[in-house]
Amino acid sequence: MQQVYEYIEANWLDAIEDLKRFCAQPSISAQQVGIEETAALTAELLQEYGVDPQILPTTEGPPVVYGELQGDSPFTLLFYNHYDVQPPEPLELWSTPPFEPAIVEGKLRARGVSDDKGDIIARLLAIKAFLKTKGRLPISIKFLIEGEEEVGSPHLPAFVQANKALLKSDACFWEGGGVSWEDRPEINLGLKGIIGVELEVRGAVRDLHSSIGTIVSNPAWRLIWALSSIKDPDENILIEGFYDDVRPPTPEEIEAIKAMPSDERELRENLGIEGFLKGLTGTDLQLHSILQPACTVNGLLSGYTGEGSKTVLPCYAKAKLDFRLVPDQRPEDIIAKLRAHLHKRGFADVTLSAAEGESPARTPLDSPFVRIVSEAAREVYGSEPIVKPSMTGSGPMFAFTETLDLPVASSGVSYPDSRDHAPDENIRLADFILGAKHVAAILEHCGHRVD
View 1 (cartoon, rainbow, N blue to C red):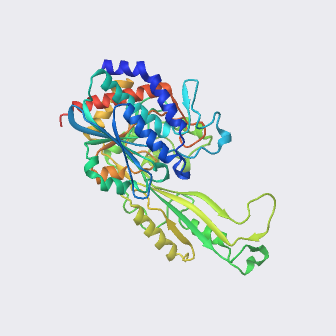
View 2: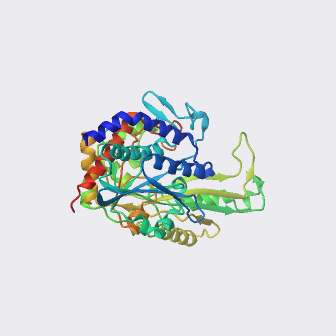
View 3: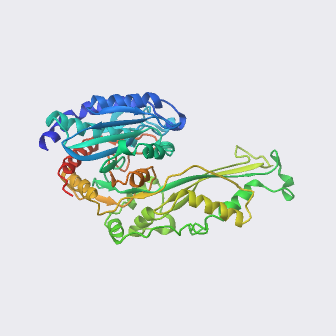
């Protein structure tokens, strides 16, 4: 492996130039900016690094970039990534233009560099290092790189279902992650599910003079009362049956979370907050963050919110919410329960619309693949990895754990201040090198897999 590591150390700067080229191409799925061009560039990069690419269509969605390369072992590792990025706004908060990658103080700054283009190039560098030093990979690999992760991957589950034979593998290495505040490698084994909801109340045909509020229903108040029926001040979600399908954590999962180092001080300072909900601290904070579902109001819209006063009774009110789900909750079941909840409480006038949603996913801690990824991390980083049963975010991992029946683990080239989805998104160059070495070590360890 020393030759492989030395190749990475000698050639990472060239890979960074490719990463800069990748990040300079906008690929904003929410705005449909640059998607087709980025799919083509992604396939081009795969080919340049020795992987055979294909651009495959999805039903009404952006194309999937697929790649494969045969190796010495029949063991096949599937890499999941995405080439789309979040919108860069607000632009005025960027220190440098988001699509003009810049190296500043040992960091590469650009939209998408952490989430998720840096992971893609690091993985390709590891593959190229084997090809240049060994001639072949120790195992076979496949890539699935989608173009709508940042808008909920609505077409990916159907694509995976329709391409089960093509995607057949032994394990999946997910995108995202990296190192902790202490620079220890982090390995994540799951994702929460998510369902986005819009609640809307309509009243009169137009905004009215507020003096008529004594006799005409106010959609804003109706929406406020409906929202207050969903969650109480103690943060309990009040929808009947909401918690019924929550799978109790295993003793091993609880112990893994307890073993995680506390980062609450750094997190508080980074977020600029005094404390956390319900006064949570220490292990309780970690357990709650990873194992509990959530309901979050994303935005509210009604009436006049401009400067000064305007005495109106609004004709409509709208709220956007999301529910973060844990195993074994299902988006469609939660929506049905929410709809029944609103009707039972007299809010039949509240219109509910919802996206398809994503189910939660979690790989068991005792999976042989988890051991492989952990051993590779110890070897490369020289410290004990932090193994998290789940990330707090969401994604289409369930299509891989359920449809393809694969163990999934994730790690990457990020660090806690990478600022994913925010201005000045960045990675540290040192983390990029270590991330590439970690992938190389995983490939080698998978090649020696016995069971």
